[in-house]
Image 1 (cartoon, rainbow, N blue to C red):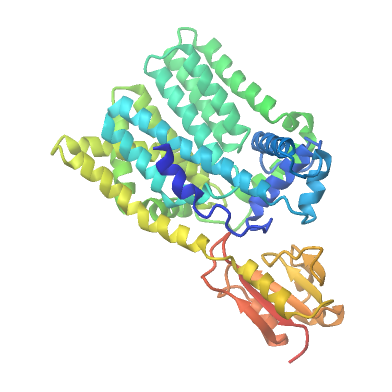
Image 2: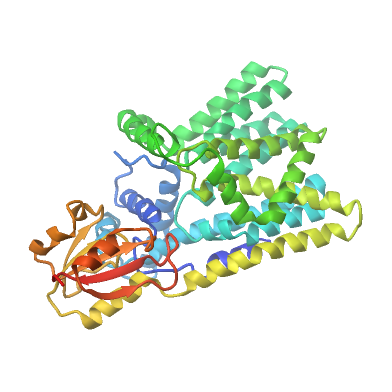
Length: 479
């Protein structure tokens, strides 16, 4: 099952390389991981994510650099790796390594799902759950990014599974393991911290000394979190300031945003498909009717995660990724239940649900196998534009290197557009580069086209974050 899940996750894992900002979130993660490699483990003002995944990547990077030196390859010393990478001096293989960590950890969930499903409800339950995770388009896509989501999903599942084992008669050490995984999950992406509620509740359900056990579980989770992400405490002021800013922007505290639960449910519908979502709903209902408290926990944990992220102001589909393994176990339970009517229905359900996920994954893999629009635009510029040209580029456009024969100014936040395109005339640029993932709804390309001649555009295939933004190149001369 591991290899079946790993193969689609390794397909085109090098998408958009050697770009370092193909996906803005992974660019930031790698950026701060390399700061750790270069000797600075303190994120200071960056607390969008806790520290555990950053330190994990830093350890992977240090190990690979050490091995390269042992085999006689020339790589910069650790204290120069950060500057070498950020200034475009190569080392793009580090980004590939970071993506590989996500791919491997994501694939590792498949055999865990198979083992848990088989142990609790039988072979077809395990195979259905593992196959759905292996083939699901959202799970495959997120495994292609050097971001925290697949690692958080794995740790969340391990915490819930251990806690289910504890509730079904396991030893206190199972509850402690659940606490450890909860702490590591929260130190990867804060939201797994909500599982501390289940840790405390489980202690009151199972332990003869519930208060002591609940305190032990919660404090263990908190201690592991603090050890894996120490600067959330050591830089408490900076952490609180940044965390509250992110909380207001993503979770709540402002007008606008998404209608509660709508985008989360739409994401489940779109990324799981009608059949798998229906099977998961049936299986979750069966969990709730089960005499085993561990089964009921699996259902309540999935519901809690969906309700939690569904209440946020911003509801990106991948925010609910940690609920998918639990939902796939529920689908596996539904397959076993179908097999009680007719024996052949269990394998037929497993095959049908898995095959229903394949087209979406195939479309994604085909999309990322095409050379990224930013790479094609960069190749065109190097071939066509005159040497010494002055370029202004905004976000989501090609990354020019210091060796390129152009004078490049970067405006990551599109600040020069605030006063309108007319202000670009006097700035002395020869070309302006603009990128967008919404070429139809974004008004900027229309405004720039009305003011300047369009030299070229790169907008095929259709944009879809973080792949293939539409890139427009304008000559800064009035029509």
